[in-house]
Image 1 (cartoon, rainbow, N blue to C red):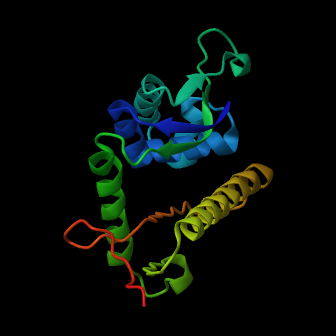
Image 2 (image 1 turned 180 degrees about the horizontal axis):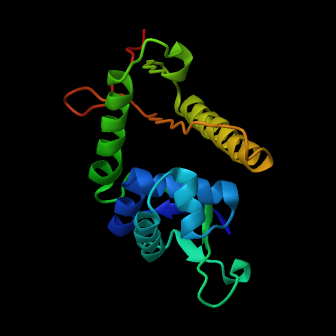
Length: 191
């Protein structure tokens, strides 16, 4: 299994953009391998729907069959091809396939608020900083490491304690230079 698969093809972008397929990839990361019926039960979706989504993910090259875990030749068991998937920002169609649905999800998260909601469960932060290129590179690396560490930790905890109830959380992280409307990078004037 490769550590990270870079997503660049439009077919893979569309495959990754669907929330059910994101849940399937996450669940396969937790279970390490599974059948459609197991995944359907784990994510609360009909088995025929999960089978369809598995075929889409397989066609996009994001999952493969794991025949070594099958009971017989007809049994189809699936596994991820990578521990994580990264969308290259310059991939054609990435904005439409990935970013737009993610932004809609963000808006939906904040539109839905129940009175018992703990404020720590829904966060939105917009910070502006003045960084050198080296500082920006270091911060981007630290953010990626933090998020990866928590994802790995949560998946391992779900494997170790499968009976413990857990909610699916998602993090949308965007980090880059802030451009003004003219398209030029905003810079602090030097004195």
